[in-house]
Image 1 (cartoon, rainbow, N blue to C red):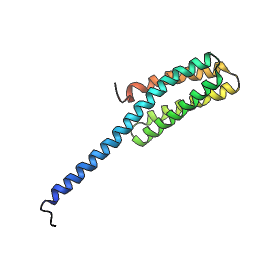
Image 2: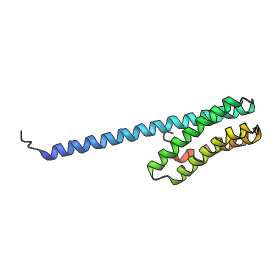
Image 3: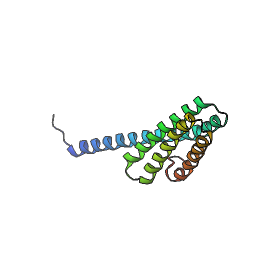
Image 4: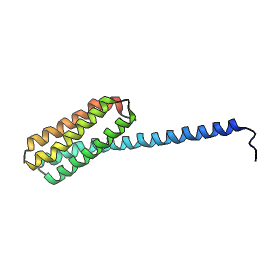
Length: 133
């Protein structure tokens, strides 16, 4: 079978490729928005758990925060345009990782300070990189 319009097939293939790429990027942005919302929620609950001396719950929240910051760090690194967001995500990850360590030492003040600083760092990055406003 001879195709009379090879340019149409090439254009269709290009259109499908662009649409697929856009859908993949949209899924990443949607995932990113979910991660940001989870971080926002957990940054509040970890502070509450620390204040209430709920050590295991605070440590679990902090581990989840660190995991989500790692996802955001990878997201921004893959984007290639947001070096400051990669750095801020790495800093958030480090702060979240400090919370369980401080709680293991029974240093509630250090854990609370790390959690508060973590919550404040969200605002530093939030306005520039929040996908949905």
